[in-house]
Image 1: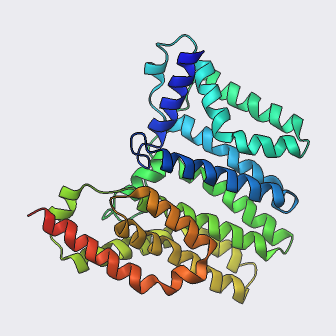
Image 2: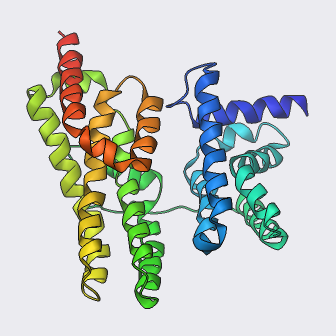
Image 3: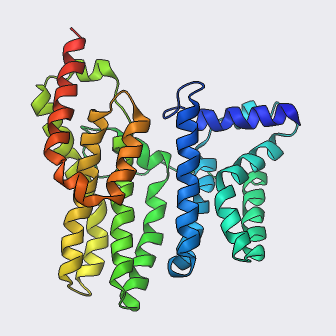
Length: 302
């Protein structure tokens, strides 16, 4: 069992390798604390969150569909047990929340879903064409990687529930989720050589990244807005929509502010979401710092 623990630990590090340097225990601690913070928030607001809480367990399901190390893992006779334990560890803080809330049946159902998912053949999906602009190819890559198009029906159902119950808070939640999804491409990084050979000045390069993100965000958010605005017109939702569209743009700035340190970008993003007023005030500073870093990166290539 000792070797199994080591394998599971390695698998977890491999999954988060873009955010964790080798033996970076500080980053590991921060990620664990983030999981615990989300679980604590969910526990304190369990009744108000309702069934949306169970979306936290979809992380392992989505990861299972996109991972490509099954053939390598099959060398170990206990590979199914290893994968099953790995997924339990990802959801452990949320399993604890369910246990404390007395939702034992729910825990068993989720474990059965995990088990059935591991035992069944991996689903194969045909490539889906997206309308996104290709200046930043990571919009296509991340949407295919995480099968985000299949999230859209669920998002639309949640939005419909908000309309049916006349609950604008659900619409705020939906718009927030869409905004976060549109931030995924900005957590990816192009190669430095690609930036150096791009035929644009640093100012033009950053402008095109922001423009591309804005247009692609609208492609994804417009279907949600049409459902909402054709049913109700709420000034608060309109204002929040403007804020939601700005979140992916801010994450682009954070990406170039912390280009060499993804974990700082992620932590700054989470902090910025929690303290929206502060990050909006500092947008000009973030822009200048991002532009300065792009200049440094491009000049370093010559």
